[in-house]
Length: 303
Image (tube, rainbow, N blue to C red; front, side, top):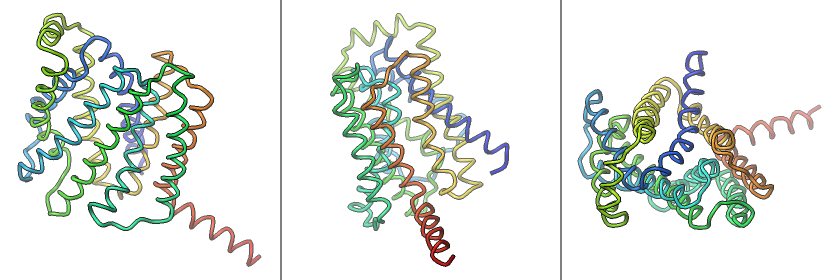
């Protein structure tokens, strides 16, 4: 990558990593499902002014909206509201890569490689360490489970994205923006059912400046700007070169959560974090790593 594009990549990592801190600030003042509805309303209204509607059938937009836009963020926002530390959430959510592998095998009939199996085993052990560590920190079991549900929803969204591309449709920023119109509906309905009209009205009437800034960050920076720059990088570089950048997101998320939210991480959670990151690294760079190790071994034998 050029210096400019490398800086763009770092900027995306920071936007998406800091995003988890912003979510934690947001759910302190707003109910999570209402916040999700407001976020995607802003994404839809602002994004559709600048992004042309993609040539994708409505059924695919609706499916993508329900599993990725609504499913992922309804679970994630609720997880942080119900006791999942923002820093750990940024890491656990990356388990979507492992869920995507499994779903791709069963739903898309894709093959699975040795490094993918190894990555799932290693990262799975890490998630187990984090999951059983709840008594050592303020993390709740419900928050952890909801974050995993968000990761699974993200994985389903990845599979639907692949299905859309396999049918010849271009699933870029337009998919993110225009699917937001359909995500508003389940968010609003579930907010009325789960959070109640009185809380919704009180939150709207008493909305603070900080809540407005949170919504603007989530809609403009995390969604529109982040995915615009991400689409730019994917258009100019191979996906295999761009995708590993997401490994930096939980690093930024954890550091920002410690700095801005005073979140503490136990030793068992650090072990889990290390294992999950190593598992994700194996998944992203496994073939290159194994090829490099094999070549070094052959060079030593030949020497």
